[in-house]
Length: 161
Length: 121
Image 1 (cartoon, one colour):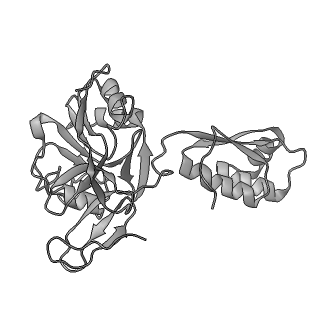
Image 2 (cartoon, each protein chain N blue to C red; image 1 turned 120 degrees about the vertical axis):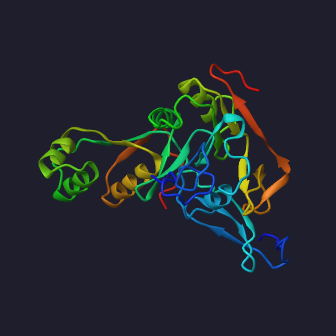
Image 3 (tube, helix red, strand yellow; image 1 turned 60 degrees about the vertical axis):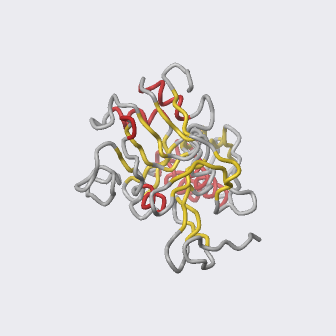
């Protein structure tokens, strides 16, 4: 599993890492390369989890392949990780906060922690900047800056702020 | 057909990219760009699907080989399964798609539940 232990990732767990972030992506993934440059690691004490995602799953890099896991498997994974266990989590994972009963809410319920997640796709830039926005309908490779989203906090039991 | 995008750093024409998990655009001149999750619904489908086949009275060795491969069992176990039929595999969409392709090639009659929204192409 690509978790930054070897120190490839700035701002993630590893030899050169700051505290409070785990990267579950392939180290050659462009999103991973860009998001690792973000300035706000471990913001407000939320542990950053970096993974590709959707409304009901995240994708983790494991033994050379991509594995899609639901909130139950993710909860088991995070519970067994002493660096994440019990901490509030920020998901740097596309669309995981897109619905009231989606991945982020279910994860918050399972782990009994606050989970912050994006309502739309996360777009990362080489300088570490990132935005939340829909995909452009005219070009699926670029964000639609007129349709931005945001990060929302999901609380155990269903309260959303 | 998409419109041309020019790099905000060096004004070169940007090109789109896709790797296994990401997609976005990059500037071939200066490396500027952006990336997000690639839109691949089947890979991000966390539902579990069941693929089932009906029992066969006298399964051929070709059928037995296919079932043996899918279930990871020996030929005797595969034949026993084929005589009874039932749920051949329960897995995620990507794996079920590969299994369905094998069954199509072997001319099996099968069904997938819940409704499988992906093409086998």
